[in-house]
Length: 342
Image (tube, rainbow, N blue to C red; front, side, top):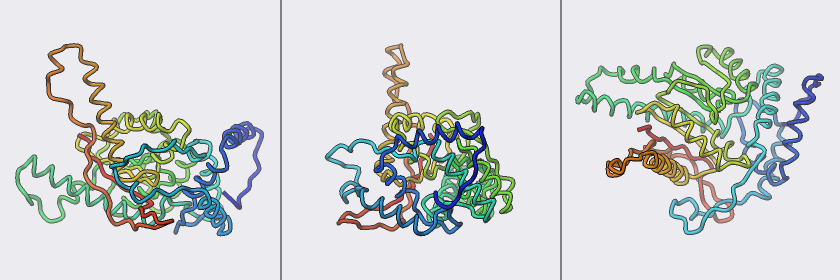
């Protein structure tokens, strides 16, 4: 991040050295991947000046490999290449980032970057509300057997009190957006203390002090509560950019499945996976869980029972994101997919 400097006291020197050591392990190509992801224009104010943003974008475009049009299909004939890692996969990057963002907020009142941009955030919030309303009405019919049995507007008031968790919440602006459209039981978690401090400050300033924020690592969560709606906007992307990305993504699914209440909804927004790839990842997780359940059974008779139900089931995805073309390849930069917790 450019344009902000502050003096470190003695207690911060060792931490800064550790962060620098981690960042030094990242190659120039990795920095380009990070620049490409981070150089998304925000309507909420930025800690990057335009020259730096353009330089980052130019560097990223010089090395990034865009997927061919056929790669945006789940029926791939060739295996994927080696996983890409980036400094965005390190907590030290996010700690440093939110230290900058917090200093910028205190000095200028800027909210900081909006991951994927404000338009995507607003789209995710409004679309998620509609999906939640559909699920609530479906569950109502299943339980009561009567369609439209509630007065007009009553169903929306009922589902608006759903418990909501935003993992890797960052500055918490997605939760603010959900609050604007009627949700009220809102919690944001992030492993960066700076992110949580910034999110609380912004919520207090913007009139959403009732939103709860807490420091928690989704890969080693200490939360003992299940939520009816869990959102993830960019967190799985960042986890996958760690050098141990495949292992950490597997840990992510194990953890997130324990945070979504049965019958609840998981809404994930990513830029490093397509919709089909994300669905395939969930199906692989479901299969891994099913295989584990069978392996735990020592009674041969149990092997003949019906297979366990999948943990997550694909519901829908946002279909309105604009496509782009680069070098003859066509695709969408962002995918948002909803899964039902069974």
